[in-house]
Length: 325
Ligand SMILES: [Zn+2]
Image 1 (cartoon, helix red, strand yellow):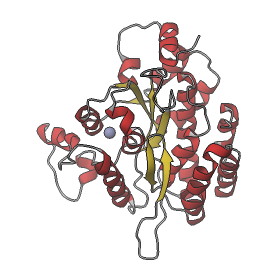
Image 2 (cartoon, rainbow, N blue to C red):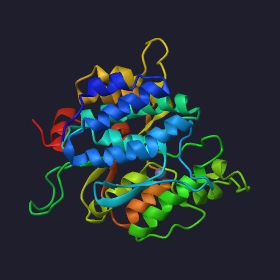
Image 3 (spheres, helix red, strand yellow):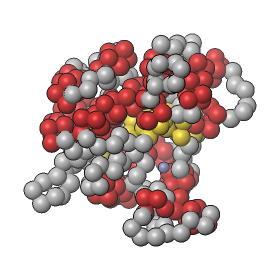
């Protein structure tokens, strides 16, 4: 696999016109090396390019049915990608090696946030609120005879509201994909909605959006699906979700965004300090927690790990997480 340097990816994420964005995405697909090129080109030609051309976050046929591209994503042989921002996460996740260290993965997630913001402007929609990274925290975990490549990771985003269109169809497709591989029932109201109800927030149709997160909304709907056998085999994973708006907005008095600031940092503790000071990390929601718990997955939420008051030794942690010296 051929990887693009983070500084090159950051540079490319600054493009602001649809033509420049599609040209940068095309370069990334065609330079990815033989292993993934076919999949990346399918996602680019099938979703990303048509969306940029039509100024929409999804592609539909003449009858309004959602178009999706089925692609291999880590454990999943045919995962349906149905919207621009999920496709973008897929493409960026294939620009770095497995076994990349955590600081690399956080920077990549942050570049993804920047790219979402620039693309959303071109597509004339709001950007996703959150981008999410799921990764294997102990690359050498498990038996050496398994076919599983070590240190894998996935990226995805929450579903955008668009112009009020496509959102429910995209969520339905994500739930459809999950329900085929997850031994869990997707009850309504969802765990988040139940918690809202218990807190006294009443459900008033059609304001589901304000009532609580529906199934299929979170980035985890894609990343969990992409690592479903890994999760169900109880392999230790980490999750980190970042607010797109916070990561890409200029910090008052500093003049750069958190996304730009961390590109210049080389120590994990400094990167985490920026995320923490900016308030950029988002905890995993009850729906996603429920999905993880229902298969006894070992998913540690780094929004909590990094914000806990417990002092940690980052140097030791970086080595433990990444198997590096
Ligand atoms: Zn969630």
